[in-house]
Amino acid sequence: MTYARFLGLFVVLPILFLLVRYRRTLTPRGLAPMGLLLVVVYAATSPWDNLAVKWGLWGFKPELIWGIKLGYLPLEEYLFFGLQTVLVGLWARARLLRVLESPEPQRRPAESTGAPTQPLDAEEVAS
Image 1 (cartoon, rainbow, N blue to C red):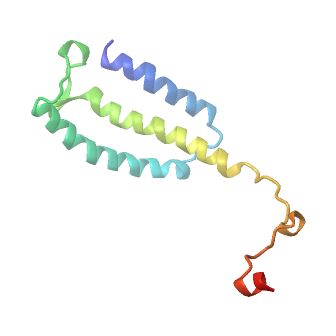
Image 2 (image 1 turned 90 degrees about the vertical axis):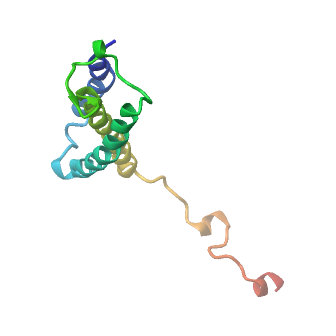
């Protein structure tokens, strides 16, 4: 399987699903933090991955990539950084919104359970 096909099946398709599924809640303001996260991801990952390939820690089979390289990395690797970040960001945002928007469970007041509302101090226990 080529790198591009892997990205399409396992990263781009889930992103498209999330974009369609949560299209009503996606706003530029809500997605802005993901832009900052992308900057951090590229700044942190690009140098490390370039050095790892340069030093021979891993590599890419020429027949499985497009052949466009930026530094020592194929274009698909850079796409993977960003697309993976977008996928996880969209999923995490959807989960967070679900938790924040769910109604809190009904709780009975402490008095109705018979439990004290405040902890007793040593004098109250002794009396």
